[in-house]
Structure formats: structure tokens, C-alpha cells
Length: 144
Image (tube, rainbow, N blue to C red; front, side, top):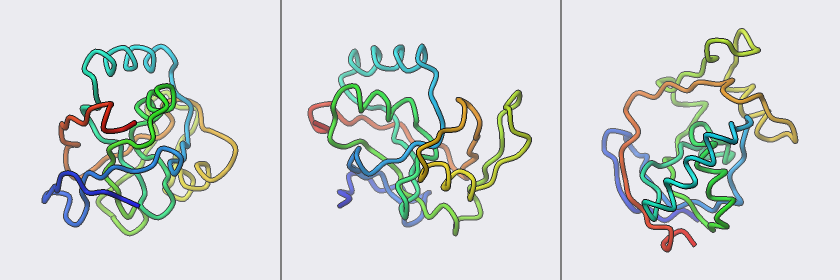
């Protein structure tokens, strides 16, 4: 299912892979203006320059809701993603953004929401990763 395209030793066994858009599950809404700006930039660049971060077991989006929305609008079949073992990787931390409607959020909350038909408001969860998400370039043609 996953085609590895760029190994990241700093992420351990994880790598940037092409994953099917239909497999991904959002857990929070997006800000439409931010998505529209990203859509225009993605078209201008002709590709994705940053992978999404996804739970490898459930397809839950951890980082990249706006990029996911752009992929849906462009009718892409796949997107670049770093697939992590969300529950097992204690170095991945989730917290709420300042000014969120929620005081706290857990990994369980994130996955349960992604598997439901509901969504948290935009900028509810903030994931902290042990490493920076690497810059990449995957052309839109490769994702169609």
C-alpha cells in the first residue's frame, strides 16, 4: 500500500511514503482562507513541498489537514506522508493550541475523532514531533 520514496533516518523506521488520499482521516476542520492560499501555492510550485504526518495504523491525520484538503480539491490519488506509530511513539506529543475551545486533548481523542463523522474546530490539536518535518518535492503529476 505504501511506496517509500525518501528515507529519513532521523525518524527511525519511518519514511516519507506515498499514501492513498482515501485512506486518510481528518480530525479537525481547516481554515478555508489558509487552504485556498496553500492551494494556489501548490499549483504554482507544481507539487507538495512538505509531507503530512499520519498514524500508520488508522490513517488519522496528525499534521497536514490543509495539505490533505488541497489534495482532495485537486483530485489527487496519493500524497506524501510520514507514517508513525502514534500511540507507541512517546516522543510525539499532542496538546491544544492557545485559545482553543478545549483545555486538553489526548492521542485517544484525536484518533477517536478521526474515526467518527465529527471534527474538532480548526487549530484544536497541536502535535510536537521529535524532529522537524523535512522539506521535499513531489510533483502533482506523481500524485495523480
